Amino acid sequence: MAQKVVIGLSGGVDSSVAAWLLKQDGYEVIGLFMINWHDTTGTLYGDCAWKDDLTFAELVARKLDIPLHTVDLSVFYKQRVVDYMFSEYEKGRTPNPDVLCNREIKFDLFVDAAKKYGAEYVATGHYARCEAIETENGQKYRLLAGVDGNKDQSYFLCQLSQKQLSTAMFPIGHITKPEVRQIAESLGLATAQRKDSQGVCFVGKIDLPVFLQQKLKAVEGVVVEIPSDCPVYKEKNNLDLYDTMQPYSYTIDMGKVVGKHSGAHFYTIGQRKGLNIGGMQKPLFVIAIDVVNNIVYVGQGEDHPGLYRKALYVSEHDIHWIRPDLALDEGDEQRFRVRIRYRQPLQDASVLKLENGLAIVFDQAQRGVTPGQFAAWYAEDELVGSGVIAY
Picture 1 (cartoon, rainbow, N blue to C red):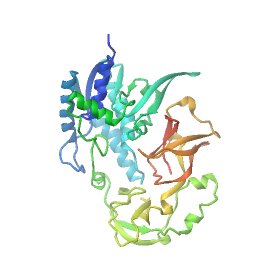
Picture 2: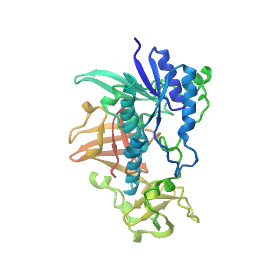
Picture 3: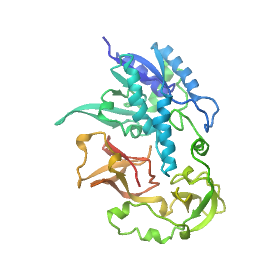
Picture 4: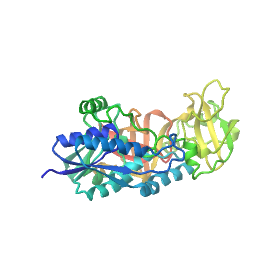
């Protein structure tokens, strides 16, 4: 009897082709469509995007001759992803809801729903790979980058556990996006030329300040420009590791007030759009936010020193090893390749296990190190671990 695989059929081309590949490999494939969000407040399109997605998922299921079911996880999605998102922005941090959605919804609650249909495995259309290996500590699962370097989505899976990977399948991880489109075209799938979804996972493209104002109040504050020759940057040279990890600290008297904003928590480090301040020689970028005093600090130009950091810190409770057998002990240091945002080229760095956390020291200073985002470290093409950037 064929093994049962439930695939998250999203109405996109990737999951459509993933479902077909599973059928080709002899699995009994069952489609399951997730409804995770109903509210349209703050979205850039008025209608619920999931309704269109469901229509496409139904067309694909019919074409592939597989059953399709739906599951509404919106209550849990709000609790585990959206409420977390609001909380993080309120603290002046920038969360990654897509990473949380995979850990908390797609590979947790969705798996529970899939088991009701007798599923032995759960598949998604992620561009990533998973393989089982035998180690001295028994069988372990490796999370590997997708072979398509332009579409590799392993970063979004950086918080998955060994248990979650043990039942996960990524059927398109070994092929490229153009090949996926070509397969969909040859099969006559309705999703063949459908654009990839954008914005927040299951919510869609949003006007962030409007979306966040559901919970966070708009409060007027000042925008302060910090000059590139501010003494705080010279003081960072030749400091020890602890001081190097610390973010730059600013006060109003270090710069000049150049404008106003409606709430520091609506901004993120590295942001350019949305400041609405003109008349400068170079574009302004957010270099720091102070949610306690409601101040947004900015600097002129992409080369402003306030945009760059040499090291970052991950708190002890936010360190996650996908491969616990490769975890560093206190005092250990190891070379990894690291990224701090999706699609960022991997960066050479040293990872050091400290008494109460983890330090990542880059060979080259990194632009836009953002608290709340995830740092993910790789050994060649294997994603070994990740952690929330504390500062």
